[in-house]
Image (tube, rainbow, N blue to C red; front, side, top):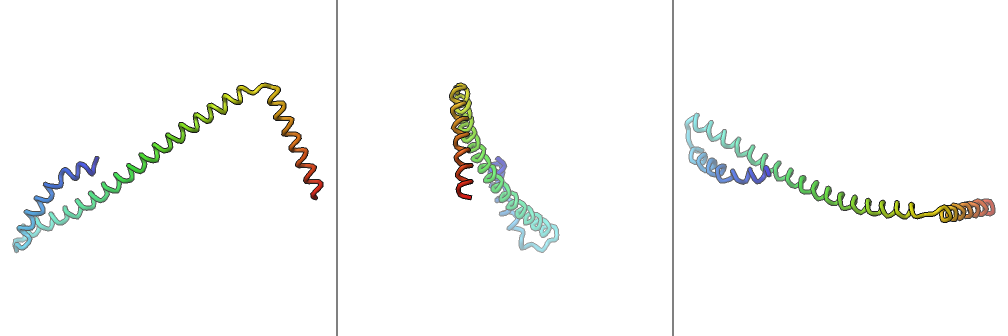
Length: 117
C-alpha cells in the first residue's frame, strides 16, 4: 500500500527534480540551497521507495507463509479428528489385543537382548 502511494507521487517528484535542474548552475546562495534541499529529498525519496518495496516483498512472503500454515493446520485438524474417531471406535477387546501384543513384542525384545548379550 505504501509503495502504491509513493508511486502515485512519482510524477510530482520528477517535476520537482526537473525544476531543480534548471537552477543547478545558479550562483545564488538561495538557489544553491534550494537545489541541495531537492537533492536531499531525492535521496530520502529513493531510500523510502527502496524500504517500501522491501517491506511489500516481506509482507507478501509473510502472507504466503500464513496461507501455507493455515493449509497445513487444516490438514492436521482433519487427521486429528480422524485419529480421535478411530480411538473412540476402539472397544476394550481391541485395546486388550493391542496391549497384549505390545507385551509379547517387549518380551521378545528382552529375550533377544539376553540371547545376544
